[in-house]
Amino acid sequence: MISIDLKSSVPIYEQLYKKISELIIKGILSENDQLPGVRTLAKDLGVNPNTVSKAYQELERNGIIYSVSGRGCFVAAVDHSAVREGILEDFDKAVYEALRSGITEKKKKKRIDKIT
Image (tube, rainbow, N blue to C red; front, side, top):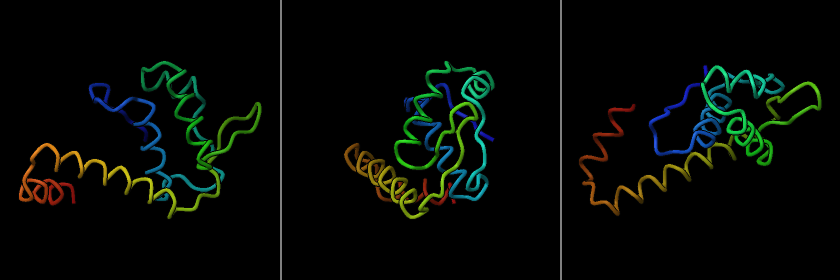
């Protein structure tokens, strides 16, 4: 359900943040669903528990999840438009970087078409 790319230049905690947000937007995770425990998810992914904890802290800070002491983390009642807006901001940054690096319009369109 949750996977990361250990070879990516994107920090692991950011990948986790984005993946969990994506699962919520797609309806795979719903309001009040419990997320895996920090140690459990860290072990499953082969990463440091502090990395998972950082992702969860960011998600909680942005109101995407909430924690219950002694019980774990759960999906909050999320404003999907706010989560989508965050994803679009990431998209905008990626497009900006593509423009700065000289990637042609044709290559960008080909890339988007490949994904969809």
